[in-house]
Image 1 (cartoon, rainbow, N blue to C red):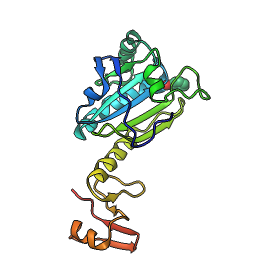
Image 2 (cartoon, rainbow, N blue to C red; image 1 turned 45 degrees about the vertical axis):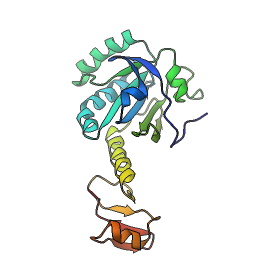
Image 3 (spheres, rainbow, N blue to C red; image 1 turned 45 degrees about the horizontal axis):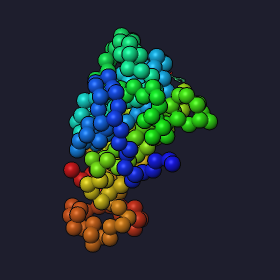
Image 4 (tube, protein in one colour; image 1 turned 90 degrees about the vertical axis):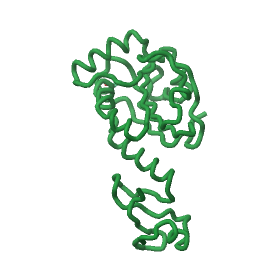
Length: 210
Ligand code: BEZ
């Protein structure tokens, strides 16, 4: 069955480039991003893994642990890691799961047989501290992901988990947000005493809560 938002992210034990781990224990109380790669020694994946390594301090700042997955053995991951560092200038600094039996890929529905029987699609699962799925994204093998967008979405997820707000189109951290439509004006006045701008009764903009 397809995993849906709000479901518990399936737990698993995995061999990774940083040793064997159990997913939920490894996450601890942090947020997590699990993302799949179709195959080792492929060009788009090489650029993506290096980009996540470059952005690792941004994930750390948000208390988000990142973990990649590719359906190849650990020895291949280790050899590929050398290529990634050599060609991209950023070495792997997070675990990459060796899922050569496609056990975890199956658990998360990362194989889409009508796209490919053997390679995973480019899945992204954002997991909250409660281990529930907060966001999923699926890209085809031929399209590299935008990890700045994933960080932007995490900023929104973390903000809206704490405050009764939603974030508008193209929102970036620090910009005005939308008061949740479920909040009455009377309730909003208590939470946002500095006030807000009403464009329509259902569209009320307020400074981003800190
Ligand atoms: C890539 O990562 O470059 C790739 C992988 C599978 C199919 C197409 C491209």
